[in-house]
Image 1 (cartoon, rainbow, N blue to C red):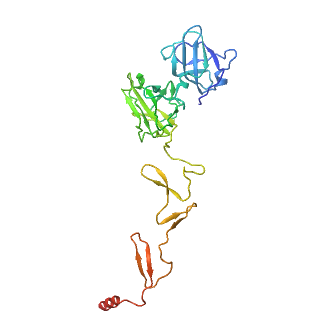
Image 2 (cartoon, rainbow, N blue to C red; image 1 turned 120 degrees about the horizontal axis):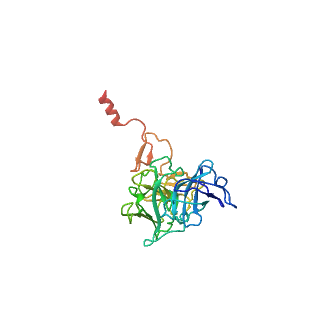
Image 3 (cartoon, rainbow, N blue to C red; image 1 turned 180 degrees about the vertical axis):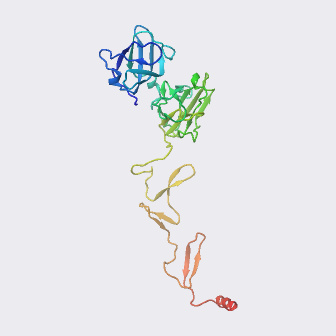
Length: 331
C-alpha cells in the first residue's frame, strides 16, 4: 500500500449511501483510479453529486483491483464534514484538499495574539500511519490529514513563532496532545508549551512557541496513549539527538591548537594552556620540568604538588648510617 496522487483521474458512480463507493469507469477525457492510482493504494478524493450541492472530500483506500473506494477519513463535506448520504449519480475524482496546504510550511507562523491554528481530530489509525500496528488504534488528524510530519519555523533568537493545536472537537476527549523529544515519550518537551481547557471541549488547545533554541525535532503524541502522532521538524539552531558528520566538522574559530571544552551548558573552543601544548595534528606535549633526562644513582629528587619531578641529583655511594643501625638491631 502506498499513498499516491495523480492528475485527471475521474470516474462515475451510482453508489448511494455513506459506505464504500463502487467505481463505474472513467469519465470521458480522464483515466480510472486503477490506471492513475493503482490497486490497494490510498489517495485524496472528492465525490460530487451531479446537479446538487452535495460533496465530500476525504482520504480513501482502493481495493486490490481499484474498483471500489473506501471513504477512510472525511476531511470536509456538505454534511458538516461528516459522510454524505449520496442519492444519485456522482463523479469521484482525485484531488488535493485545501486542508493539506493549510498545514504549517517553513514560511508560515503566527504571533502570540494570532497563532497559526491547526485543527485536531482523532479517528481510527490506518495502514498509512507511521506507527501502524504500534500503540493505540487511534490517530491524530491535522486539518483532516492523518498524523502528518509538519514543519515549524523558529530560527530567530529574539522572536517566537506560535502554533496552536485546537482540540475542541469532541473526538479529542481523553487524548491530550503534548510534545516530546522522542516518539516513545521518554522525555517530555515543555519549554514554550502551554495548554488550555480539556480536550474535546470548547476552547481546548495545546500551543507551542518556537524559537532558535527549540530542538530541531519534536514529537507530538497523546499523553495518555502510545504512538498516535508523528513529528515536527523545527528550523532552529538546536540539534536534538546524535549528530553524524560526513566529512570535517569545523568550528567558528579554526585557530590551531584549540580544543572543545564543556562549561556545563555548551562546548566552547579554548586554547590549551598551563603545563601542556597541543599541535594542529593533535600531538600533546608536556612542558619541560627543568630536570635533565638521565639515570640517577642513590638519587635525591624533589616532587611538586602536581607530581612533577622538579629536581634530581646523584647521591653518595654506599648505604646510610640509618640503614646500618636498622640492620644491626634486626640481627
